[in-house]
Amino acid sequence: MREGLRGLTTRGRSFLAAAVAAAVSAGILGEKDLLRVAVLLAVLPLLAAAYVGRSRYKLACNRSLDPHRVPVGASSRVVLRLQNLSRLPTGTLLLEDRLPYALGSRPRVVLERLGAHQASSVAYTVRADVRGRYEVGPLVVRLTDPFGLCELSRAFPSIDHLTVIPQVTPLPSVRLPGEYAGSGDSRARSVAVHGEDDAATREYRMGDDLRRVHWKSTARTGELMVRREEQPWESRATVVLDTRAYGHRGDGPTASFEWAVSATASIAVHLRQAGYKLRLVTGAGADVDATEGGGDGLLLDQLAEVRLDQRTEVTELVQRVRQRADGGLIIGVFGSLSTAEAELLAGLRANGATCVGFLVNSSNWLNLPEKARAEAEQTHAAAALSLLRSGWRVIGVDHGTRLPAIWPQAGRGSQGFALRAVLADTVAGGVR
Picture (tube, rainbow, N blue to C red):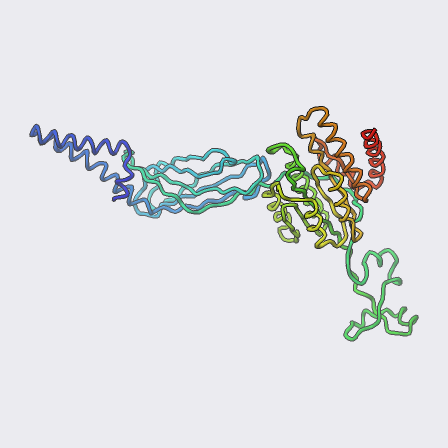
């Protein structure tokens, strides 16, 4: 009751003030009828406070998001189910779900009435144009009586999360260099090429299955020989995202870093769908192995929250990748690099790894003066040439470039040599 009185609206307080004024006037004038009016004016807000206060703790709420993971620019549907657990019907309910600014304004829905043990569902949609993991809730319910004399608020503590992942673009199928790597005593592919008679063998060991005995090799060597266990070739790839703050330009969804994040997500999903055993490394410290179960979701959730880092250096990125380097394919998406930073990336060529780099010319994302733009272009060309000399396959990225259009260059063996010649001329011209 005390909480109900604290929830009296302006209308309810006006009723009480009118009741006091009528009671005082009745006492002064000696009018009993006016006293009855005063009693009526006072009872109405008190009954409303008691009514609303009783139903305050008799509500249950459930929220669901469909889907809970959406790409940038897509919408998610939020369904709120409110149930009245009491035997008394509620008054008018105003529902307000708290949302962060990036998801839009707070939705407000009015429910006229919930009967005893009755449930009702309402829905609204949210949309975000910025990556991230956002909290949806808590839900605030305002309870009122039919006359609007009393209003109380209740906040449900439950919070759900909406993950806004980067945009994933389908990529054309391209045969990439260095895509096969593996381990084991032999390769099933070798047997398929050379035939059963050329299968790799080894000496018989205690416990080996006699059905694996290779009789031709046994007759040729005079010792019992068995076929080695064949293991299929394994496609391994490491996707590297550069998160250096000074390597990217622009703000918001149109920044060069957002292009890099979207490209990283598209490449990672494409390689996983192609059967690669994938690893994602970012300059922000993430090191994720995409397993078979929910691998895409794990990668995309990580990329949804990745941010630029002022302290990240290329040296740390190289060390992080090399901690578990085991050959295969390395695809990096880098911002603007200096020649010294490009030379540091040569260290990733160890262990026979094939390296493909998407080099973002982030100066294109800004309107620079002519002289400053020329200097930025020269630095970009010098860094690309340094990468090429160290054995990287380099693909330049300018503002407005679409990843599907340049993705086939990752599989062209000759493109690096052509680009090397062009960049050499560019650098030579700049030196003159």
